[in-house]
Length: 368
Image (cartoon, rainbow, N blue to C red; front, side, top):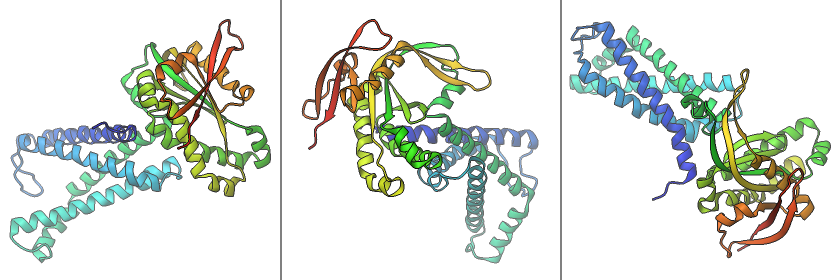
């Protein structure tokens, strides 16, 4: 069964959290071994200590705990704090997770002591043992350590979201530390009549429109395996590896799925801004050199003629009164199904600053 791009993206977001917990779990056991040395029991509780039995249990448990925390964060809690400031989100969510984990540890302590003593969980003896556990320094030092793990995990997730899909991973792994050549598909998508809309709404409300405008596109971009390369005012530049972009015509489906999202939210945009944004897009593909650039602020940069060409193709949408223009070079390997799309040959066009002419096509989706 093929996994959806959205599931893959969410899994790639959860997995680093699980790995962080695994690493911190391993570090915890190693520090514990260093402190206890050759001791065979915990000084505070007198419980038997065995490093070789403890290590796999803690590491595996930490990894599973990381998967659970990461899943809760990605699929639920992150949405509740989506509009909060970066620092506020980190502090409040860390506090929530630590409370939940400490509560779980207390209930776990009740269950374990109940089993050991052969008494119900609400028995005074069981509660007394757990109370000693809660007021012990070992419990609170563990709670603080867990808080640090949660904070680091959330920081990595938030930075990943802020930098963009895969960008943080590429920085960490150094994939583009030395420039490499790769083949990529690009889409330049620009809002129609943006200047008029901005003048009508004013700067602050127009900015709110832009925020909603780009948020509305998110699901379609994720589902198509697209990567956001740049936001340039009212223009967004999306990129695909050649394989991801051609698979199931992902790059083209992305555009029409964005259209569908705006049709669904048309009434909301009309109510809040008095206008439903429309847009046009240009497509092309080719070789680019990709690498890290910058000293004060680092970015992963694409350079190559394909970007200039795509931008010029998009600029011709108004000339041809087309919502989507694509180069013949990209259209050919896409193999668009005739029952779904109408493709119109717009002829050869000499692009500004280019010696060679490019044959362009417009694409429209057939309504079922």
